Length: 596
Image (cartoon, rainbow, N blue to C red):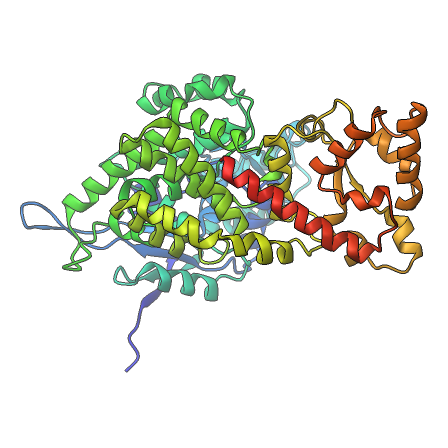
């Protein structure tokens, strides 16, 4: 027997908007920047006017929660699909202000020309044109009198037909009575089923993540301050990338500036570090995993709904406790000392630029680990070492690339049980001698320029304060900071002339960080030629490639860049060069890892 997991009903737009206004249906995105532009709003109203369908809305009812006195509280409906359409309707028809991308309130005003039966975004020209009704929200106001407006319009436009204008006004007003389909999902559905239903129904290609559902649950809660917490998460993430936004919050959101969250994030107004600019998913994942010792955000959704995992009942005290714990976790996440010390640890591992960090989930778990160990009262130097090692381990083994939440959950539970024994065993098993001797050289056999292995190699060079290829004084750290060139040791055009394809000449084992002037000087020369000229440069002291004029210094530079020294004396095939350099790069990464 098929169990119905949803109901479908049609409701007039007016009824739906009244439910939203009375908070019977909660719209989690209503306090976030409006994604649509004014043209989208105009087109939506035009579609309704012409009788075109605008799609279904989807709500998911929060489960009924058992209160402490034994009574039941009915769950609120959450709009999980249709936020933009509902917000657009409230803006255009009810005259509600919305937030722009800078979190400033403003109105989107749609104008209507009843003669041409045409809609436009209102502007000064339209407002001066007597043929236009410059703001359609007045038509839907309770004070609007159709006959009075009709008479006024016809007086200033004597050439129009009164019946035509009346019909156009009546058609416009009738928009509010057009039915929209509402799909109501049962509260018994778990988040995975809701996600699956959403994907199958939604035709726009938008896929909601579990973080999106969690943010929706947080946003619609007012009893335990979830709506303010949601705003704090959004503001923090925006401030991290746009420090000047601080003054806008201060000017435009007086209510929020009086909260403890605003004080907690105030340090971001002077912060220009972009090594870690978190999204709301990062904030939730880290705060939840660290505080709840769970890695699956679907569990957070359940806990915020009040689910008791043992009895499978929904209880008020679990809702309260979950919001309290999540708040504590987010406050620790936002803490200036925590955030800056964590960023310092990642930098101390050689990852000095955000371009070097391709795995956001590895960074997320590293911060989770930092917060966890700090809360345990572990010595700071011990924390730093383990966070660095675990971060590099995560990158080298792609630990959180596939099914990150499952791995987060697995790791945090075992770290919580026996942190150092578990981490030591994983580090020893995953990064054994055989990994560096066999596995890593094989992993370095790739032409993917954004390879995490090449980034770890660069981090090792930063850590060891290595000089750039053939540079006397300029370090790899300097070159990364100024976005210096990645140079082909065996020049690309030279290899192309020999018939090598892109996958071969762009091997990461053929890459070094080099000054642009050195790169230009080498040009397309074959290595045998320019390495011979480097030898001659050390003898003649006449500079051609960089500033090195001492042979021992040249050899030292090649060593730190993992260039086989055989190139100074013999001609190496490109394949032998790649094989030899991969081993040298792997050995360097191994020595680097020991220092972390």
